[in-house]
Amino acid sequence: VTDVNMPNKDGITLITDLRALPDYKFIPLLMLTTESGVDKKQAGKAAGATGWIVKPFNPEQLLKTIGKVLE
Image (cartoon, rainbow, N blue to C red):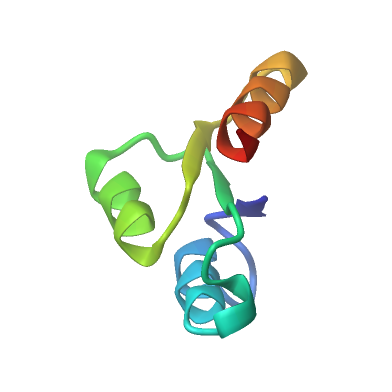
């Protein structure tokens, strides 16, 4: 689980970097963000994000999304 907006490297770049590593190619990666724009969501999906949750969210929503990607 990573945030899109971080101080040194944004979440989309982090996911792109992780997906380039063989050990992380198939690990589920969820993005958290305050941004609900289609452009960011498409960029995350293109980078290899498995799921996307817009903040604020409730803990049940996070657990449900994690459960879905782990099925």
